[in-house]
Figure (tube, helix red, strand yellow):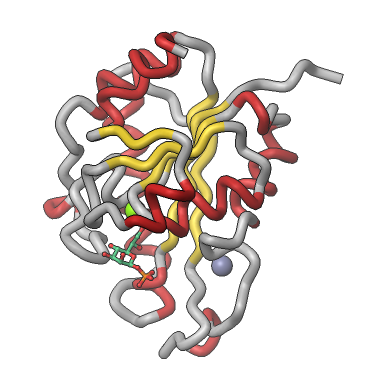
Length: 186
Ligand SMILES: O=P(O)(O)OC[C@@H](O)[C@H]1O[C@@H](OP(=O)(O)O)[C@@H](O)[C@@H](O)[C@@H]1O
Ligand SMILES: [Mg+2]
Ligand SMILES: [Zn+2]
């Protein structure tokens, strides 16, 4: 049995890119300053990089799964081009009040549920206690907690930070750019 790897679980909108609301076009996808450099450093520190993103825009009929995949492939290639190879990308297309019937459900993957993280744990052999969940919302922190992630990190680069979000987080930082140094500091 292979050794388990520590991971950085990454929320997408508000953590990697500016959350202008249900981003689905390549032209609207803008990396937050310092994101790519931070991912390069985290990779060099030995962490697997795993995106876990709620994409209820699919359930709401705002864009299709194909459109999401097109943007995701572009993002994946843009990062690979900068020496950042993502280890996994997981998304939830569901919503309990979806207008698109096939996506209308109370699933176990929409954060704050831990489904995406638990699937990644199994598929990628992740050491959850040694891992980090980085996100901009309370739901990200709760998903991390429910999945047994060791350190939950709230970033100020997305939605306004709430008292509940802060209380559920182990660390609060301005953006992902600060994470490598924060981890090294211990
Ligand atoms: O931050 P991640 O999980 O990567 O993606 C979030 C997006 O799918 C959208 O999720 C929505 O929340 P609802 O899904 O409508 O509750 C809102 O927060 C939007 O601003 C945001 O763009
Ligand atoms: Mg987010
Ligand atoms: Zn789901």
